[in-house]
Amino acid sequence: MSRIVHVDGAFVPEEEAKVSLFDRGYLFADGAYEVTPVIGGRLIDADRMLARLDNSLAALRIEWPMSRDDFLAMHRELIARNRLDEGMVYVQITRGVADRDFAFPDTARPVVSAFTRAFPVIAHPRAETGVAVALVEDVRWRLRHIKSIALLGQVLARQQAVEHGAFEGWMVEDGHITEGTASSAYIVRDGAIITHPLTGRRILPGIRRSVILELAEAAGMTIERRPFTPDEAKAADEAFISAATFGVLAVVRIDDAAIGGGTPGPVARRLRALYVAHVKRQLA
Image (cartoon, rainbow, N blue to C red; front, side):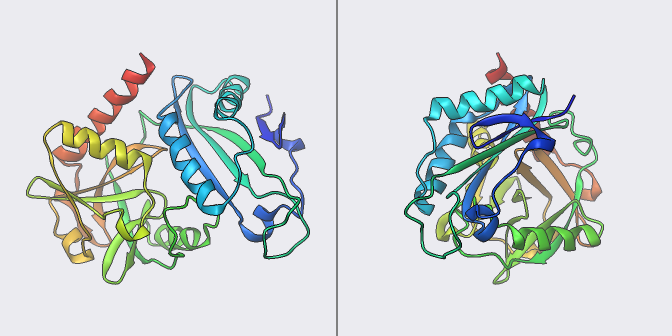
């Protein structure tokens, strides 16, 4: 069965999906996106997704194209039509279609596109082994609190990491690690979880990041929201990443440095277990 996608108000087979050459998302990357995990056929942390998307659209001065209820209904219809049990829904909203001009057009209306992807989130193949990350230069724009579809910096950084044999790239700016190309970055030192602060708009306010930190605080763990250096990361007791597509994964190597003996550590394992329990509470 062909995958069903959503384009500008219609559900169509993916091979029939079309967007205009003059869509500003195509011409200028003028839009925002969200990725929501699906587990057990259910959207996870959908309320947080709506809140972050609302912030992104407000920052870009793009109007909501539909009500929040209709937006979630579209997600659920995609899940149902594709019989998706586990994976994600990707959605993007662009400013719309207009002749090419840098200034906002007066007549364009927002365009919504969305699709599903099936893959294991809870039983992720790297959950037991952990992953490697490579350090790469952070060359992105400065408004990183917006989940913009302008992702060329992340694309180039991820490709560089892949060419170094790594699962993810940790981006470095002004001598400090900001975040992963598609994940939030953390290290653990003497039991304390250290992660870059949201201040200064240098990192995306990750939804999994907010969930993980809330779970960690509720469990009595110490959290330090501060920048950390590559040398500090390589000398850490543990490291891990979080994202919609896998929850929590331990980092066992940074460039050529083994972390925690090269195996997932107790903090990363505990946080992954806490996140799985968080998901199961929503499914219940």
